[in-house]
Amino acid sequence: MNLEGRVALVTGASQGIGHACALTLARRGASVAVAARNREKLDELVAAITGSGGKAAAFAVDVADEEQVKAAVKAVIAHFGKIDILVNNAGITRDQLVMRMKRADWDAVLGTNLTSAYLCIQNVIPSMLKQRWGRIINITSVFGQMGQAGQANYSASKAGLIGLTMAIAREVASRNITSNAIAPGFIETSMTAALSDEFKQAAVKQIPLGRVGTPDDVANAVAFLASDEASYITGHVLNVNGGMLMG
Image 1 (cartoon, rainbow, N blue to C red):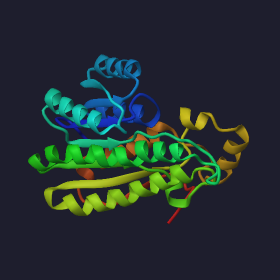
Image 2 (cartoon, helix red, strand yellow):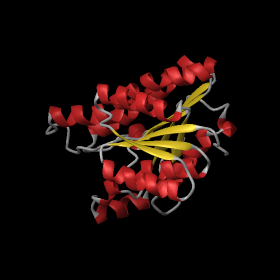
Image 3 (cartoon, rainbow, N blue to C red):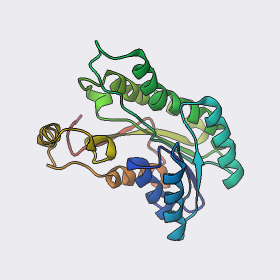
Image 4 (cartoon, rainbow, N blue to C red):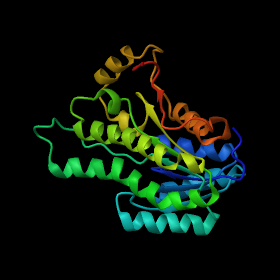
């Protein structure tokens, strides 16, 4: 899974899964553009990558803002010359039972988790079409496949990502561009750290492998789908969930 010469753009890279993806892609030889709202954390990540001999640059952007996405993609291409790999990882939660959920919380989650992926794909596609090579990888969720009480907005956004992944796969396959999704299960991140111990213990009981996943578990799957070894895989949802959901 050698990614030498490739340029990757990773959204939501300041922490958690996105942070791990950036480090892993860099270790595989890719130059990495890391994007998120927190510039300080991005700069720390860039320092970690470059300090290990890798290539990286930070781009502060709110992926829910169309103009910021356009500007960021242009800046990445100006800096690195192209974008080969797009990892749409940025995501938020605003949990509440649907009968009490505020419209603003619905819109915020759909905007950050789903619309941002559409915006990033739309702006990155021309670079990939030009070189007739590309990898689009969307980070969805097991809850986009099976639903979750109190997360109607989150589950809907992640299910929407799966549909978007497949539609894009059909649109761009003839240009040697693949579009796939990764559906993590219970992964230990700052997002899941806020959950109660009772919820976590109940979740582990549903996982045949008997443990929660790590960001690296997801990042390794991203590296595979970004590689030449995955050139005949497109429109696929790769489950990284310890067996929590099968089939």
